Image 1: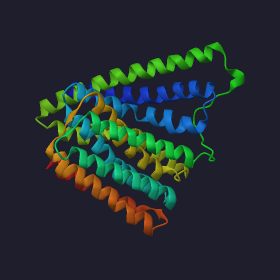
Image 2: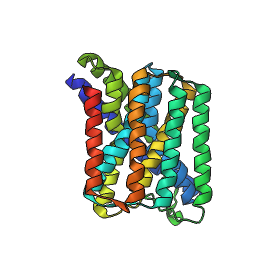
Image 3: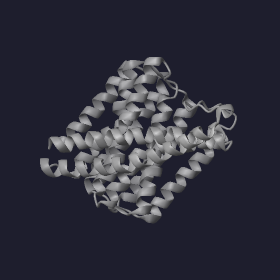
Image 4: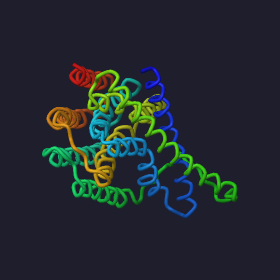
Length: 313
């Protein structure tokens, strides 16, 4: 069992490293071809940072472990808006920009309700995945038009004057290494999680909702805490909503188009309801408060603790 935990940790670290390296390489290649920073931020960076979750869910589906795939997404969405946001609130105030927050909240809620409608019959098939992914394309197109005049700041730097053949080769190397890390990391992550579930006698649903979901949410947790400590919290709430939107529309959309998913009825009747209640519960916090602080953080973390208790009991 200790070996499974070690491989699980190595797989997670490899996944996170792969996503980070892929973002750097793919973004610089796009900028080299005169793709605007805004489009890079809305597409390449967004997709690449969701790559660990995508590879985990896709690999789980192909290995006939649908509870891992669904549990990873539903659990990650719950942890993003309760644990991650709650911890960020304890490190600094999260201001509420009502226009952006409500827009992203509305899309998150609609995507969650649509997902519940699709999986109510116990599966998620190709055409339903295609509808989810089409929703993502519509959402990104709307963002593209809405933010056309905005400046998008990327962490990736690119200086055309220093664009040598070595730099070009290095970016391609980053993409190759990032893709390899994502592939092997997801293999190790899923295989060790299956062994862990079997060894402990725990259902794949519980492992997916806790271990996998927490693991793939770690990048968001680290990013939010660092941003809160630096006082750069204006994007925190929007980023977490964006992550949840991508999890549903992109990850489950693509996964179910590649391989249909059988959905555990407990996820439908319990975990999805928890996710919807949490998403709905954040709305009054946004509407009646100008910012989220310590009290909101405690409420959100209490919600997450209660949810985990109900899952494990």
